[in-house]
Image 1: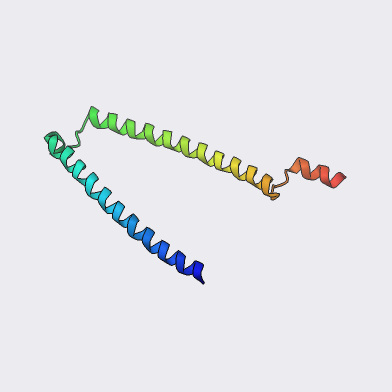
Image 2: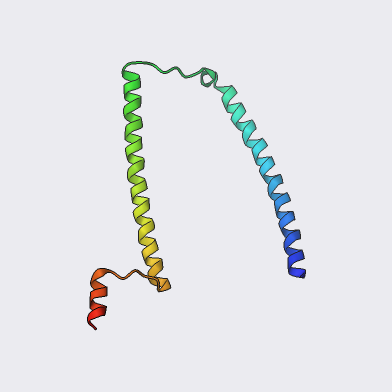
Length: 107
């Protein structure tokens, strides 16, 4: 029972300290962002969408970025599958490949 009481007190103290640190960081970072925004008045103007070559270039850049992100997602999925297979080998839960299963059946 004493472990549970210690856990509760530690949890509450950690939550209080974390909340305090988060609040201080939020205030400091928001002030810096506000100062940076006010220092450069050109950022205060709304961005207008131009029609013509500018928007075509923007559309092309967006398409290139989308394709690049799709490639990165595919690479990450492959890496996740590879790690999953490696962890399965370590834990003894490896999936048997068709060539290995045929060898096991012959023995």
